[in-house]
Length: 484
Image 1 (cartoon, helix red, strand yellow):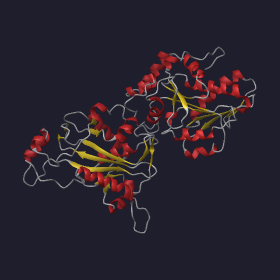
Image 2 (cartoon, rainbow, N blue to C red; image 1 turned 45 degrees about the horizontal axis):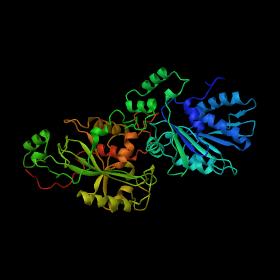
Image 3 (cartoon, one colour; image 1 turned 120 degrees about the vertical axis):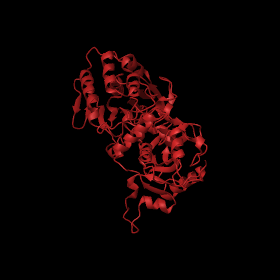
Image 4 (spheres, one colour; image 1 turned 135 degrees about the vertical axis):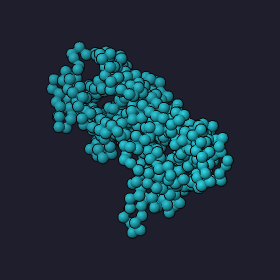
């Protein structure tokens, strides 16, 4: 609540001192006073520019703007006796003629209500709730003002949400707090302004910290994000308690191991199986296969996978029997700044690139993929995406032997067991840059806690899920001559 004796905190004063010609990113822990700062910046703007001021405050959902609406009622109500708020239009009309609008923007379908309109100040709250920054950049096209009047974008957000990585890469990493830099996309001058609850004098910090600790139970990395404003968290909420880079990250393989390793390359369990093998029995063997999540507007992701028989890899590391190694990756991401958008490569183009990588690794172009690619397309030849890949020489079987939740459960188990000498684990090469750029940061779906939030860049996670749902007997390569 804001009372009559309210005075801006140190953080809010510093933000107000940044010139209006410079954009702002208010990024930090929860409870740092970012929303109040947005309201103060809006008030100063309408005071300076009167009837020419057009302010747009945006969040992803209408329920999300409720707190800010209450905040403006308190703040504007104290400052302007004749201010009027239209709760249907979510719009303030101030005595000077200035307008402050509170709006919602979940995706491109919601942008139509802003298209062609002009604003002089954009306030974008909780920007990490968007999976990427396309909506932010799209709204910048609405910034228009009379000559001599500056336009500005001010964003606020906490680490740990859907857009964590996109926001951190663009506005936080490599940026010195409170020092001006040029945003690589907008080419606008900008300042990164961090805060935490400790910067908010109106909070009971100790009690608020206990609330955060309870909310982040089981995810210490998320607690670091919310309490300390740390953008350098290694994981996101969904895999926060099981995925450790120190256990799962492996150095890039230069070659594949022999399909049937010699006895001295096997671990104790596989060596015993090999010892018992009769003339017609299989020798413990590696199997290599593809795992694909197909997309057109979204990226396609293909992993090159190895299933260990309980043997040492070409990197000298021991991989327990049943371990899954993602040793390479191909994807069709549009850019590193937009991991939810694909380049739209055709099936023949994707197949050609996948076959080239298979040839490099000396493995067959065959594997598993999402059930969706096996649906018939309604064409005269009753084709499917899978059959189109087959025509191009890349062969897929259905991977989804269980439901979505059981697949995530299997993947979480492999992550948790990585590094154990007697349990199969998930191991991911440094070559798999898309995995390490997305999977550690996937957020949990607040409505279905067993699932990831699909609004984020989950394509690399889906492909990994399909890889671990593969049945072990499926698609084994033709064995090389047995070596004893």
